[in-house]
Length: 133
Image 1 (cartoon, rainbow, N blue to C red):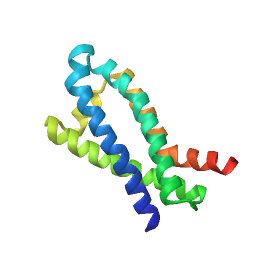
Image 2: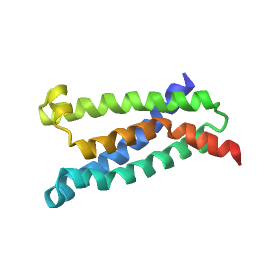
Image 3: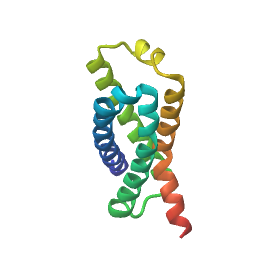
């Protein structure tokens, strides 16, 4: 149960940061640069947010977490993120899941998939880095 809470905390921090950055992206960047470039600009910020959030949770809340539990924390956070994101995106845009997936830009969509993978693995990376020190 503790790992579920840690995964939820990690998810919540990154989701809130992503919500704020997404608002800026949609309202300010997309009209000026288009969807693709706006998403590509946002991606590195989200990766840094994932790193900082994983580090915060693991250093401040969960000092003694195994590598397996760090991976579980990231996977739980990923499931929560995808559930919330797809629910919100589909509801706000009035799209079906199929329309959403086929309408993604191939370049920024690929970067998004990489960022999701990094988001899921970030607690494991942070844990491994912390263990080496």
